[in-house]
Length: 122
Image (cartoon, rainbow, N blue to C red):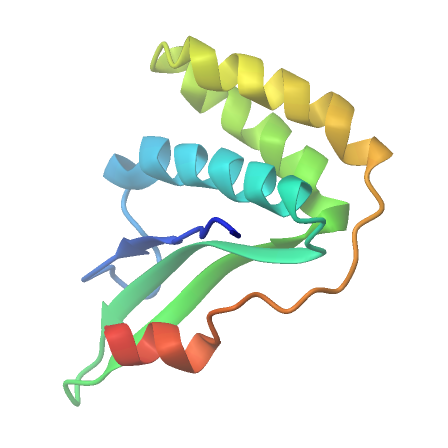
């Protein structure tokens, strides 16, 4: 049975940008997303969806997504935040993933949940 990964959902962001208070959560979800992508050889994954209200009352959703060419760079970017917040188990996971990513042949695979499913859940 295939496990699922649910991206972090941030609501009420201003102009599609989450506030600094979400920095640790985004770092954690980025590591989880890359680990999931490695487990299933996914070339592309969404770590976070940011909802911003507009003047007309509609919501704009911005996805913080990455492809396999960005995995190492994103892991490197998460490390300082995880260290600062003493998330040492995740720091160890980052180091493990940085070694693993170059060894995986990522494939274009369809993730079960379609973007329309995610939007309809909002």
